[in-house]
Image 1: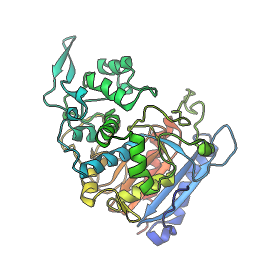
Image 2 (image 1 turned 90 degrees about the vertical axis):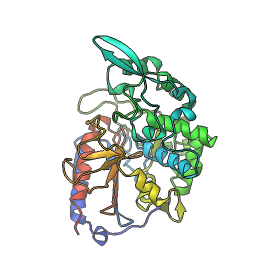
Image 3 (image 1 turned 45 degrees about the vertical axis):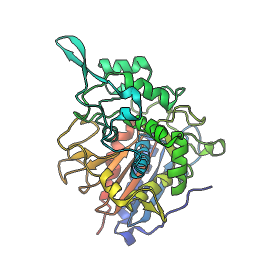
Length: 395
């Protein structure tokens, strides 16, 4: 079953410039030719219609097959938005409250401590309050990622092997709940394994595996036929691959294995999708929770998710730029200026470690998706792509 298409239009019919989008194509094509990325697929939609859907380069740098528009990409942290939506679907059903402690549903999160270093000593300090489900959604839970630093908490994550594809979601949540926190819940924004824990929360509340719940309640209803935690054998010839060695530094590049169904269904970074699949997800969000007559969320819930939930809370400026806060699963633009990238207040976005990126701008009635598999190059393309798409707005 192929992914249903979306309505299309010529760029000028939706207030975009064909010639300026053509400049974007020229840049992506040139970057492929110089060996900076193997290939890419990009979509730009405005007013509910796809005005740009192009592919560049090759699907696999070890072969000569052109990149197909329906190539399947490892989307890493773009999984977070999907899992956050799934979580809020259960919230809409009255299955939990956002201000409830995580420990109510995953008991190992009770009695957590924060690791504090003072005068050369390390102390375990009791939490001022328990982390809530809202904390997980907005990354203020006190959790972290093991690769986000070299301190004692990060070392504890490494020693505990919190990322193992052979574990289950329940296994990881049990480990994370027992490890010390990096900061007090609610005190700082820290990019973390919080969405992995949300994946386990979905399992506990729904009684299904995360993959089964997503497939039944999100992916199939939206027609996202090529999305999930693995790629069936019949479709593995469409998997987009990275260079074996990074073209800038020469380091080895190793992406997650997606040809076998994993035991660990990482809600924070384990999914695959095509660009069109993800476009359907974003169109649902831009529509206020509905697509083709199928409603996943109520419009006020989408508004809640895409509003800032941080206020004065700050942290991790390398991932959350000035002028942005964070909602329930998405970074959210809070000011028209300050940030070095264009976009209206209310724009929301995120990306994945291998180079995929998206954003939605409700004011401009626009969303865009770029998918590449080039981890080291991702920051450049995220910014360049956004700059050039906004420069194509012609009304």
